[in-house]
Structures are given as structure tokens and as C-alpha cells.
Length: 224
Image (tube, rainbow, N blue to C red):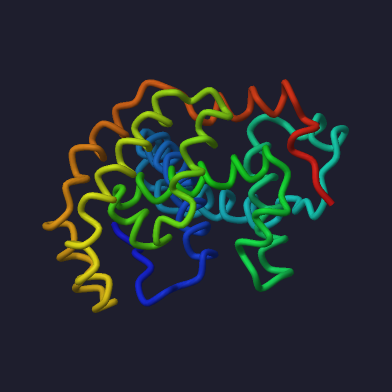
């Protein structure tokens, strides 16, 4: 499934795609458990499990400011999402995305940039990441991965940036068309495909590294 953002779609759709990708494994697990139950109750149980997951997400607490004590009180399972929600709130309150990102604390900016890379690559590969973001923060994404001691991700991101730079002219003709068809065709001209497979095979637990950094230095993730 590919929810590509073409024609300059808003960054908010990138975020929603990432959120959905994170919930899919939970829903699949629920389906597996339900599949082992009585067949007569499977459909109802599946509907209830999916609805509960959606309701839990919809009714989650949204943080519009973050301090050290607040961060310490958030459970690990909700910690990254809490920071993402905070950044989304900041995005919605202003029109200049780049200026907003510059105003974020070092930790929150790093989490946001790595979150976007992770979501885009998991959904449609590095080619989709560069297409949807124009690679605006791809260089900083390297240092953001390093910030979380995600050395494997940082090295692969660095390599991806190099590959994209080399093929930029070839891809530009597809970008200029700015259509879904051109986006699909651009994969044939890109040499990033093998890097996608390597990304999926990385042994680093990026989420665990981010949470560990927040727990170690919560003051780097605060914001009004």
C-alpha cells in the first residue's frame, strides 16, 4: 500500500501515514488472536478490537507543551507519539514549517526528522522520502540519527543522500511532471531500491534508542 503525497501535499499526511504504519502491527496481532477464537464471534471481536485501537488513538492526551516532569510521567509506549503530537501542534499553529522546526529543541527536532524518514522509507522507500520532502532536511537527518546513537541508520542515510544527489538530474524530469504516474515511474530511474532493503534489515531498534535518549536527557525534549 502506498499513500504517496504528490502535487505538494501537506506534511500532515506524511505524519498520518507514519501513525497508521505504527498501528498496523497492533491490529494484525489482534486479528491473529481473534482468528484462534470461535468462528461465530470472530467478526464481532475483530470489529471491536479495531475500533478500540482507533478510539484509544483518537482519545489520547495531546501535549501542547512539554517539561521534564511531564516527559518523565509519560509511559514508554506513548513517549514518541507524545512528542510527535507536540510537533504537530506547533506545525498547525504556524505557516512556516522550516522556522517552526528551527524553534524546536534539539531533541524534538531530531525525533521529528528521524520519525519522518522512518515512516516514509517503511511505506515507500527512500525514493518516496525524497519525493515527498524534497530532501529538505535529509542532511540534518543524518545528524539526527547520530543524536540517538543510531549509527546504522545514520550511515545508511548518508549513503542514500549521496545516491540521491548523483541521480537528482534524472529524477527531476519526473518531479517536474508532479503526477502520481511520474512518481511511480521515478522508481525505475532511481538506484535507491537496494538501500530500502538494507534499511528494512537494520538491526538497530530505533524506537528503543529514541526512548532511551529521552529518558537519559529529558531536558533536550522540552518545549512550550
